[in-house]
Every structure is written in C-alpha cells, then in structure tokens.
Image (cartoon, rainbow, N blue to C red; front, top):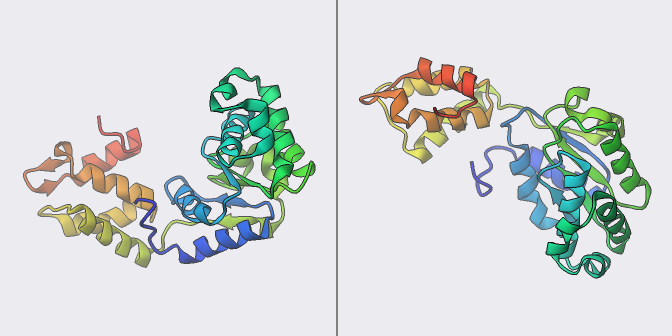
Length: 245
C-alpha cells in the first residue's frame, strides 16, 4: 500500500487534517501495520511548517531530525547556527537542542514524532520543554495509548479529545481490501479463494499483515505448482514477522 493508495480511511484522514489545523497536541495510535505513518504522510503536504520525525527513538535523533527539517524549510536562525546540514553531525545533542529551541519561534511550526519507542522521562521532559517554551504543538504516533508504547509522554495526551485511534478494518472492509490487493498484485493460485477468506481471520483485519502475507504468497517457498501453502506461510509470518527466510 503506497502513499498514493489509502484504502477506506477518509474519516481518519479528515480527523488528522483537522487536528493538525487546530494546532493542538494529539496522539495518533493503532497497532503496527494499520497504516498510521501512511495516513500522516498523506496529510503533511498540506502543512508546510510541520516538522516530521520518522524516527523518534531518542531525543538526540529527534533534535537532529528537527534541525535538518528547519534547514530545509529555510529557517534563518537554524541556517545561521549550522550553515548547512553537514554541520549537524558535528554538533552535540545539547548544542542541537539549543539551536532547535532558538529556531522554533521563527514560524508557526508543529512537530510530529512518529514510531515512538516507549520514550523515557528525559525524552518527555524535552517534549514538554518544546511545548512550554512557545506555541509549538508536538503530536505523537504510537502503537497504543498505554505506558508500554507512549512511555512518559502518556500524561501529555491525557485528554480524550487529544487521541485519535486508527483501528484494524472491520470484516467487510477487510474483505474488500484483501480482494483489491490480490487483484492489484495479480496474485493467483488454484486455492486463491480459500486463501483470500483465510487471510481475513489470520490478519485480524490488519492491512499491513494482509499485504505481507499476500507478498509472501507469491514466493516459491509457499507454493506447490499453483497451490498456495497457507499454513506454512502463516507459521513463518508469525515467527519471523513476514520476513521470508
């Protein structure tokens, strides 16, 4: 599923668009593979001053990403302090944080932190510092709204109106999606109908899981002549996360 193809997510996309426009901090959450990153990226072209961090594993990584984004947007303060992206790797985490904090008030920026990995107390403190120092909202993307995924950022998005959930497809939508993807990938097999039906239950309506298993079904390892070997495919999907070995 590419950025050009978002299946039946109009309502979620409109809500993300609205939340970004309101410039209020929000948490976008849902299981891995549900399409959160795809949705966010589809909306971002409409918001020039959104600073998107695809990797939000540590504060150091975040401030490097933010500095790079500010330079690319022509931020004068960041440009004066760094004089090009090559300078980013030479700066310490503390120095980069200072540069970014100084540069943010130059415009109405907002920040999206994608792929949170249970952020630490220090990480959450830095986010609160960003939001407390001016008018820069910080939006987060995680697998759930619970502590094991949002970490110490959980209290930042405590209000129900600050949370936007992206769920797995319901049965009807999942069936339409599976058949559409099988058609688009031109997957065939003597048991393609049985595979399409079992895909719904095996994936639990998760579009990422369905796409992965459809891709796996095209591999010779999971085929006997024109027959898809569904059980071995699913076992490997569960064991290896869809990595064909």
